[in-house]
Amino acid sequence: MKEAWILKTGSIILEMLSGRNFTIILLLLLTANYSFGQPCLECKQKFDRLIAIEAQDMISDSDLEEGLGIAKELYERSCVDYIDSIANNMAYGSINLTHTFASIAKKRCDSVGVSYYLNYLNFTSSSAEEERSFGLERLFKECPETVLEQIDQSFFGDLAWGFVNNRYYGPVDPFEDYGYKALTDYRNSIEPILNTKNYIEIFNETYSTLIKAEKYPDEIKMLLKKIAEILEK
Picture 1 (cartoon, rainbow, N blue to C red):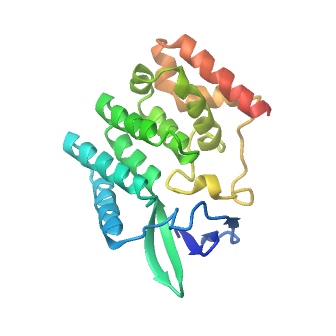
Picture 2 (cartoon, rainbow, N blue to C red; picture 1 turned 135 degrees about the horizontal axis):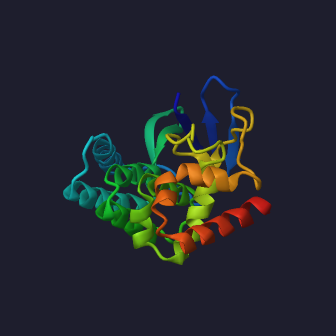
């Protein structure tokens, strides 16, 4: 079952409703004006449209353009989470804005799709949301060479952070569809395997096409160095 956000005055409680034990994380609201929710019906309607684009099998240039416009508007209005329902003065949500737009870009994993996600990252550069890095790494896994062709070294830290979190359980991320991974404690679910001894092996398996291409040795070396630095902390 999907995550459920419970927004209350002064706090946010995240409950993971699944076969596992409840995981509850309590955070202070960053602002008083629904920092993590939609303040109006119009925002919900725009989020609905973004979700509809994500559900498409094929993503066109116009879909990317429309999706980026919606994502930017929602972000500017602090509508970064989709509210499913409101009951007893509590708002329940399950979908994250960055995760949704990253998914759209990943379905169009070519130079155009990558450029649109990078545009979104630059637009939200003041945000400390970790899902930004997670989304970039998922895009990198899908089309690593295309991503490397469009980014500079300033993005390598995000890629390394995304790798450490997304590949914590190996090349296949069992929680890839969870939009709130950064706020979720999975310690009682699946045993993590990533560590300082096997990160190169997991890296090579995750990005096998990149390794086989043998075109970016310096970039790979730098990424591995940043990954090692994170793991050693």
